[in-house]
Amino acid sequence: MPQIDVNWLAIIVAAVAAFALGALWYSPPLFGRQWMTAHGHTPEKLAAMQSSMGKTYTFSFITYVIMAMVIALLMGLTGATTAIQGIVLAVLAWLGFGFTIGLNTNLYSDKPAAAFMIDAGYQLVHVILMGAIIGAWR
Image 1 (spheres, rainbow, N blue to C red):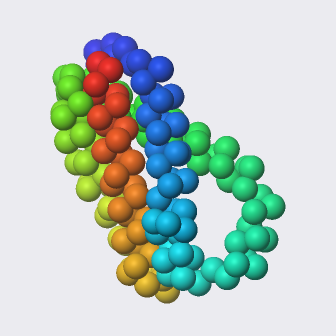
Image 2 (cartoon, one colour):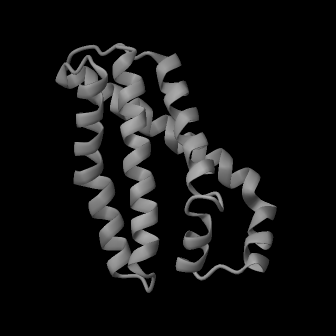
């Protein structure tokens, strides 16, 4: 297997961008209210969830770093060197794994399709963002 150099600054910036996009995506002006309704959360339940958000945000950020690192490694393995190639690779990875796993999980849950669509939409947009950032920095 070839040695692959990754740009750690690009990985961290991509993770921060995905995290920031999530804050915007799930905010009340965008999809926050619809997401809350789709998941059956009440304002009281959200307030109770806030008590453990520090740990949740920490682990969430770690997952974004892992995703960005995997995108960077896949780009190195495939020879992708541009933002467009990074986007294509990220979308293919999302389609093959993120979308399919998320859809199967939703099919076996009692959550409405709206919950899946909001979450899957965010996941697609944030991997596009990650692929573009990492590809632009290769």
